[in-house]
Length: 315
Image (cartoon, rainbow, N blue to C red; front, side, top):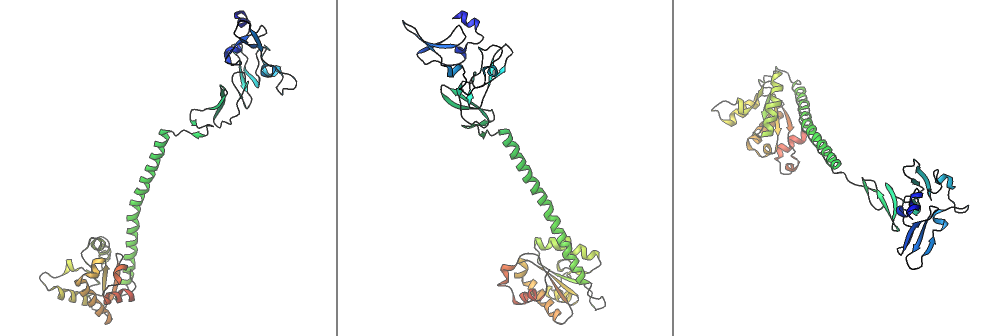
């Protein structure tokens, strides 16, 4: 048997399993494997031709296409992929596997190769795939981190753009509002006996002060319009009510900065009542600017203020 192994280029008994568990595979003098049963009388069981040989009706390629120069080395269901003399290997047809392509393996592996071990078919997957048919991509932790980093950076960029865009848009809206006010201002002449272009009626809230002192006042006063702001221009030690009446009677317009606090403030009410009275005498114009959403307050709003807001176009 050892001499037979030296003669044969390939010991098929070592590279594949042809015999049952109670049998032993040995190579014949013609380099074919056979199965023998251990015992006092050895019964040789030749490998059938359907396993290793071919005939005209088995549907296999001709032996010349399935072997190299040595006809004793050939593939059953495939073609040789290595005929260098340093080894022998086969490229199996679809549905077949093992070194000699003699084992059926019908699993449709998506990203891998079908293998038949001990009559059990399974898919040997590529290293990045898993699943019974190698159909599932194994998640890459680094790829997850890259995706997460991309999402976070995109969200941060959107937040940053929004943070920059909102003030810009608000500034542009305020500029448009002030331009409308300027247009209204130009409808009055300077020879009407009034010394103040506009009385600013407001309550001291952050939103109102921010709008008036940072946007409205600088823009109008830079255009040489004279404004009256009670907190800035009222005479020191004077009676508040008298200061308000005098300033309103000498103003061409009253600009009302409407906020939540303005609606409930008593001094604001006093101011817009005087302004309404001056308007009825055709000596003044009221310009309401709604700075905050006051829809919920309209139900319980002072009737005079509600009439002003309903009858005059607000900015």
